[in-house]
Length: 248
Image (cartoon, one colour):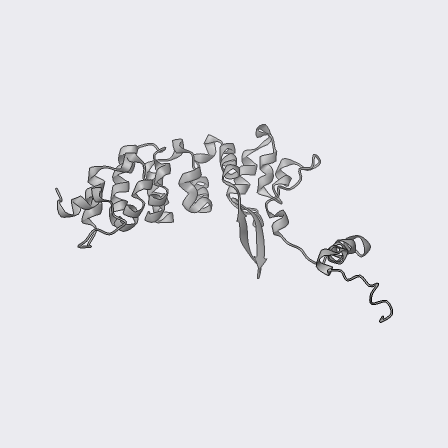
């Protein structure tokens, strides 16, 4: 080597074909030995399964509930929707699009996008929203986002009470902007004031996010009187704190 040391060319392996060859070799094994050495599930977690014309719409949703979004509206049946909502397919649970199996238990992963969930909800006919079991299942599956996705025309005061019982009182404060779309505003406004009073600190911190329909003098007064601080906290606006010292 001493004779050719001056003629040798040194190369950086990181910038040469060696690094590329090392990666290509992993792919080459797929063709030479049918061997897959590594697998990243996130590569396909957000993909919709390919629709085959030879597979019926009902069988198509067996592998992925999102496949129903590929069908024409007239081809979507109540039977398909019920199977998805009631969670009879344990591998692919709406509103998730993938899962992991640990010790025989299925854990859903990768929540679907907002527009995909909203599109699915738009496929559900009026008759299904009148079904108590369907409503309860949607409430359980959508959890805190139930108010966000559930059609306003089907939302009532009674359903609101069940939602709070299921998801907690803080959930209604967090999702209060969606309540402005609901029916029976007078009942909901009164019920909201009662919940806000119980969670005064949390409500005050999010007061700017609340719809104007629920911001009133009575609410400000109840919130202020629920505070025990002697001095105004930084997160409490002046227009609420004034009722703390001057209750009516």
